[in-house]
Image (cartoon, rainbow over all chains, first blue to last red; front, side, top):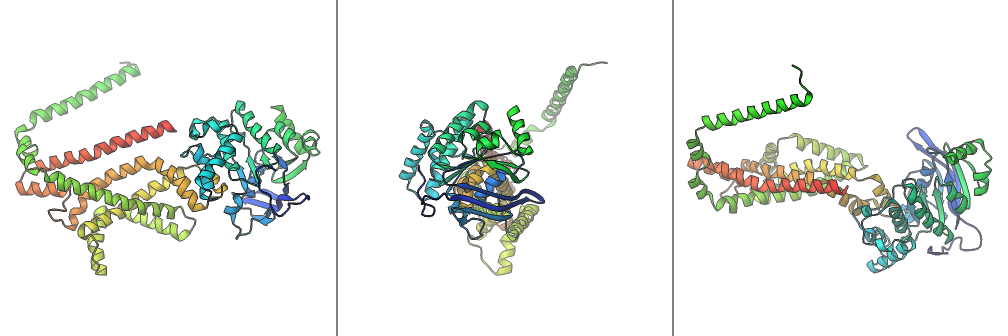
Length: 259
Length: 263
């Protein structure tokens, strides 16, 4: 397994769920956006979550590292309940790499600063070690030559690849992608998907909220279709994307492929 | 008479220029230039003000401003964080403080601090009257700058703190390493404006009483004006104020232009 350190629990042959969600409900005020979600991601698995906008897929992903507070339900990360009020959320988040639609690079820091600040401040790595790791991850996303640039000088695709590198620099056990290519110009989507494809091949555990059906078809081990706050259908990409069982999934897929 | 809009605009502009020319012309013709020169631009009086107007008065003005600004900035940061806090009593305190000291004239705050506190608590202010003045002005400046800092913090996109929190940074570390550096970049121009206002507010220090060595520009000029019965000291003080404030406002314009370009 690339990068991620082996954990004691689930180190054996048995498949273990690194993310396990049970009966998750989330309200925004009176609006129920997640209506009892059961969901899991196994170690080394790539799960793509698809569905119309407003279906709750981004909220589900953001609940996994508690950027959104779940209203009720359980979320186990590597067996640890993170909805527990006493859970050390900061420590937990270092295990979960997060990539946003809007990249969210720190504009006041250069690429090197973006890649090292959390390493040194949170993981307490030495400056030298953090810089070495920054070099490594930047090379993996193919942007070593941009190490001294400021984010504003990079294209959207390059910014997103740096954002992926920033998450990887923390040696996370899993990576979350929240519509990582939705804010990109069409010609820049490919370079970001290439990086994600490579990560998947290296065995990274990934949860990807996306509208890229081609990517889901090719890379995902499992596709989850959500609509109106519930998981409507899930299974192998070929099943969900090519022979959907429900009318709702059929209608959604017709609309995205018609584009 | 039918006129095209552009012609009408041009005519209007020429009328404006004519009115301005008439007003300036009348002032030049009617004004008694000998008396104006003697009372406001008296070179002999000017000569007698130096070097004290710079070595004491201007120096004190700058010193009082910088001290009040520094202390006020720290107070403002604390108030801004309290106002953005999720803890209701902190928010209530910040709102009460800001509304109170923005609502009061700075003069009254200075008197309350300078005379009220020593009387009420039998307490001698460290730094004496200057100390009381600096404290009073810091309290007022903190109230004004708190709102500026809060606006700056809120102008930093939410995604920035979400990204920082996702990397495992605590709420406080996110604030100090990610949000505040970006917020301050946004608010340097308005903060510099606050400093220009503070420079002028140091002229209120006189209410607390002064010694020859603690006078700032306005008090220094006023006392000298009364002593020699000539208004030239005010002219000199005005020019010194401008010599301090104009470079600052010029700097603000530069910073704003640069901020606009980098965005």
